[in-house]
Image 1 (cartoon, helix red, strand yellow):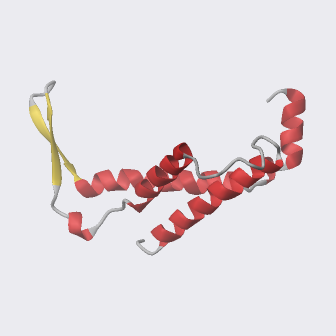
Image 2 (spheres, helix red, strand yellow; image 1 turned 180 degrees about the horizontal axis):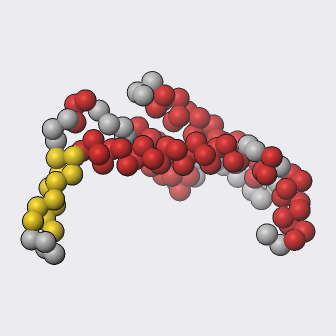
Length: 118
């Protein structure tokens, strides 16, 4: 599980670069526009940090406590369970990369979508 995480980070960076180049070819961005703007860097760093979070053996036994006023009791969250929620975001990133390279992301699909106002 830990070996795939750096690979996903690199593939996410590659996907962002290829998407930017695709937008340059479609003339959405000018050729002079740079990929490395503050917002894109912040987005890439945020995605990379979320990708790097994963359940770990070192987090076993650590809990986060929250007080619920409705039931007047403490609620305990295991740290590994919270990290597992971030694992589902990895699936979204992989799915987004697959869809961007699918049949429905071709020039013909974009042309038909532009004709019918999608």
